[in-house]
Amino acid sequence: MQRAVIAAPLAILLIASGCKAATPLPESAACDGIPQIAMQGRVTDAANILSGTEEGRLSNLLAEYEQRTTHQMVIATTPSLHGARVGNFGTCLGNRWRVGSEDKDDGILILIAPNERQMRIATGLGMEKVLTDDKALGVVQQMMPYFKSLDYAAGLSHGIELIAAETGEVK
Image (cartoon, rainbow, N blue to C red):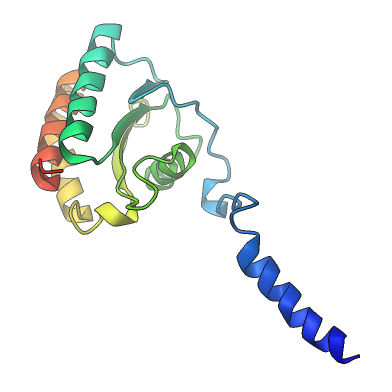
């Protein structure tokens, strides 16, 4: 009888702590309804708003940024948010794609949903102190004039430069 009393708390501890690495954590309910979009590299243009040349140029800028700072930044476009809030969509994609280094949680995802005329800059927890919500909003506001004229590549290039200035150029 005493063994059963001791075994139950031990089993609970093993389940609570030991299984985390063995089984992936379930997605939060906030990700319900958000489609699985396969990451295509540093730029995933599911909305087809960029030419191949523009995608390549942006991908090179993002690679240079990552080399200089060790922070990973990616771009995603989607033809639809599927009724989800743009912030939830961006956070879910960033988590699914594991943007940023695992130990620093320092990823940045720029999400554009052109058909809904919405965008968001989502950051990992390790980047939130450097690229605060207010600073990210300021970057978005400076990108908007480019997007209004449908020059998405120029707006994204400008956004990358602004984010790089905020998040530092040092490894």
